[in-house]
Length: 153
Image (cartoon, rainbow, N blue to C red; front, side):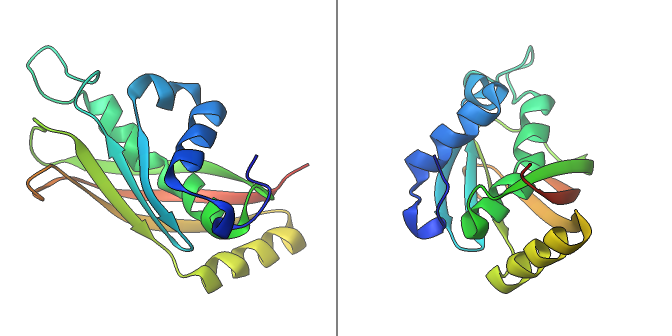
């Protein structure tokens, strides 16, 4: 599954791949709502992630914040590389009482450059600045993620 490029992907296929690769994401109910070369939109549902005070569990927000570094490379490079999160800083700005969404972008040319570096050096590092919003479009959290891209095998 997902050996080809993003042209072969649709959101349902990408969601299934994420759920298979990281079963915790399936339990959280994460959905890839859109995927195209260099772009991904992720959605974390409020249910089953409601906490004891009726807002979204912070761990679910962290999960949606750390995942784009894995899905974005897949949008251009397929499954030829293994993405690894190495560090995430997250600021929780307000309680979330709805589903949460995150859009992440990286130019396809930059992703291809990371692939070349990973082939040559065994790994390539990259960073993403991310914003999580609620259903009203209000910013509920920001994150800065650090990732590595490594060749499979």
